[in-house]
Image (cartoon, rainbow, N blue to C red; front, side, top):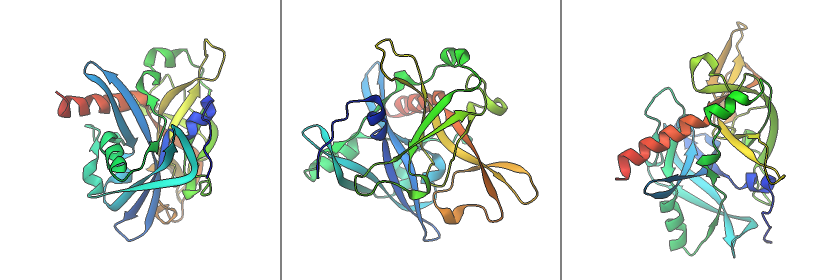
Length: 272
């Protein structure tokens, strides 16, 4: 296996995410996406794993899949699976039950891997890059978006890489869709896209590529048999997709501001 220099903004996007493998209560297997977030606060810097609440609740068992590091670089194709006992209990959900987000601290996972002589590779999304309300107001109604994850469980199994996808905003990111801290994207969102971080390109003073962290994929719109459109949490497996319904390539994104609120709630509860 070979190492790979992660030396561009687009390459870094590939290493923000972790694959989430779960066993559901009906015995089926599920796949989803999580990502690493770094947050600097008055007491230091904390690292978290972020995903959707619906991806971890009611799960029998779960694991996070990392890339192994060698001399600070990722070893392509070398994966390390961390199985987590009492998987649902390892996460803290957003204090608002209607917000489909959950987090856990990253450090215990790094310690568990290190105890087995394994170094893990990841790239954290800095919470300072979260799209702020003031910046969102200056964005146009239609903006390009990128998101990273494991749609329909697809990934590059040889190299251990997730899938990068493009889309556009379907509602203005500066507005709250239906009055909630959410917006819509026009993009192909499939089972396994749950928890995918969403990015919007932003100007870079250095002239390179830079991105705002805009939010987290949480739901997809279905057209039901009665022709009614409904947002449904992105299922963890194809078998959970609604029978007699059709996805219409509209994804619902929970705004990054809600991720920051969840982090603050965690810090208030667990870090004095």
